[in-house]
Amino acid sequence: MKSVSIKAGLLLSMALAPGAFSEEPVSPPAAAPAATNLIGAVIQFDALMYDFGRIVAGQMVKHDFVFTNIGDAVLEISGVHPSCGCTTAGAWSSRVEPGKTGAIPLLFNSGHYNGPVTKTASVICNDKSHQQVTLVIKGTIWKPIEVNPPMAVLNVVADAPSNPPAIITIVSSLPEPVTLSDPISSNRAFAAEIKTIQPGKEFQLIITRVPPIGPTTVQGTISIKTSSTNAPSIQVNALAIVQPAWVVTPQEIALPPGPLGTAFPCAVSVRNNTTVPMTLSDPAVNADNVPVTIREVLPGRQFTLSLSFPAGFRIARGEQVNLTVTTSDPKNPVLRLPIRQNMLPSSQEVGLPTHHRGPVPPVPPH
Image (cartoon, rainbow, N blue to C red; front, side, top):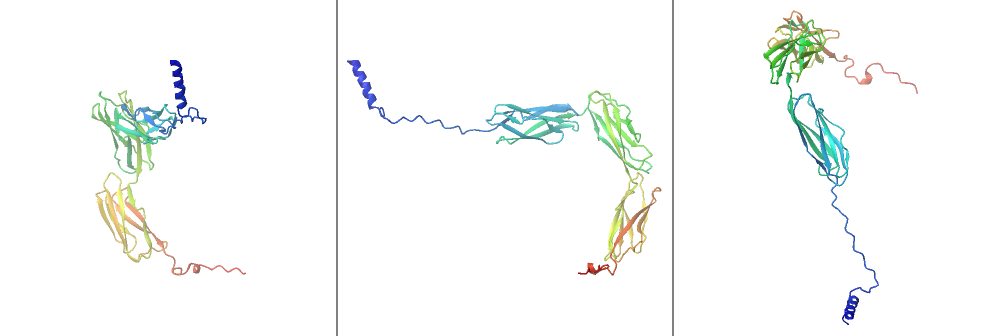
């Protein structure tokens, strides 16, 4: 009897439960809402800076900057822009899937540097939080033998009795003493010699232009062998630029159209490029009432000629007017500067309308 009453109690409780015998279907549980916290592509570098330490000038530095896409979308690298031409970017990973890694190779040429150096490159990507990332390469460039200046430039005068040499300083940073061989020139227009300043450490390379000196610029290379295995040879390019003995600026005097309405002053600069100090005297213009004075700006080297053309001054058609000055240079005893003046139209042309100047063409018949 007890078991029967228990079953009856269970049936009664089921009958009394809400919706136990309802004919309407029971709705399934609602689906979970979709995720809305997507972060996109995210770039993360193993390191943003590479220190290459201490290297000999001329060595190439190559380093791969490795990165990982820790986001949930494809990472796209659209550009890598080094800060200067000495640093170049190789073929970088342009598309990186989520969770994958890529690399940006950079190559630095240390040939023209000495001492501490820092170079950068900008990385452009689709990481919304880091659309531009800066990579850094740094270190110290060491030159076992330094040449300063690296190129010899000689300004020479063709007809000068002598020309100053170019002096190049050579300093060794090596712990052991260094010896240099006699210099050899690739062009016979240059002569070179070595002068010792501090044995084994500091030297001077003296380069001169060998006469005869023509009117054209010449160049060559001076080669020196050293006792160092770190820098077994030194090469210095030499350039000789030929200049005139005297430079007159301007090369001619241009006057406004004459006759001049008012007085017209002007100045002429004269520079002596030879190694010998010179003097100027007897300046003159072969025209009336044009005074000329000389002022010595730099003794024996630089001069200024001041002229004043009076009101009413006019150079007639076909007339040649010049400024002349005497020098103490036996090869250039007189400097001559032409004076030019534009001519106004003839009096019968002035003030007439354009259609009154010259013959009038006939009117064609209708």
